Length: 424
Ligand code: AMP
Ligand code: GLY
Image (cartoon, rainbow, N blue to C red):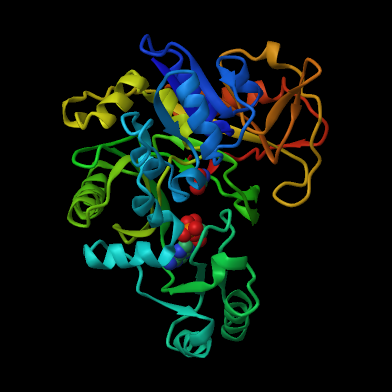
């Protein structure tokens, strides 16, 4: 079958890498893709949210399945666009409906869903420009630090954690009245601060049944020792050594099951990934967010550990046969280290020639922000490459990732040298 994959990051290169290994995959198209996907699939020159271009391509190339990587096309309703189109309605889209995607598109919607289905989450209230003074008052009833979340999508930057009450009140006004995050902060969720270790749970569902995917931990800050600004993610490790069977059981019964049952009760069509962000407070997992897609760079360690055929797995999702699917996972650990452009997550330069790919041994280099330029592979974003390795344990895997990063070069490249150190 011919498949269309939407997106252009390391996550999508990892999906593409795995899907082209499937005997079920004839031609894989990626829109817009990167230099890594160009080497194994056919890149298309339009964005993942250009629904008209997507429709034209799907018809022209006889596409039989669409896999959605990032949240944008999902929040914009790609699933419903296919479902409601006479020519596209029979083509499965791997990703939730627009209503399902609202779990990521609106923090308030997610909080209401969590409360309604009695899924553990931090206490909260939400405010708009009209109720900003009430919000400032509400803050006085909480203990510091104060957690302020822009309701809408804000490219991962919409959460502020502030120690000082007066500063929190000022930021609340900036968000609601000053439109600090544009329309995304026209509503703000104020949440109780949870003190504990963060972890993520990745689930794939066909709307009825679900599979829990391997655990993974990412490293969000730019600086070593988890310091500095937040990024999309600077590295990942799978499995996470501190997540044991007892904790997983709690996560499954208290969070995953009621989430999938909640979709059914609320009539939310959902055939895709659910990425649940949790904080483990004294061994009690509590939800801090839903994402309606896989994590990046977590995908670059989760997908390589999947032994099963990914296209077959997606077909099981599309056909609501996930309960019959046997998911096989590689016992080995996988790690990935993200190589970024100097300056990221603030200003950085693009167009730097990347060299050394031919010297890499025993690692997989997934491309993120790269493109082809006159026969060279050049940087084209903040996160540029991610170097994934396997090992009998994560220490062995991470050593290989670092050995291979040393063979790769571009001007002003930067990476964290401490991925996994906190787990030793
Ligand atoms: P989110 O976009 O909801 O994942 O939030 C971004 C980051 O803020 C998370 O990865 C956590 O580190 C932190 N965070 C979010 N909500 C809370 C909370 N209620 N308590 C403590 N930290 C939080
Ligand atoms: N790595 C975190 C995310 O994809 O949101």
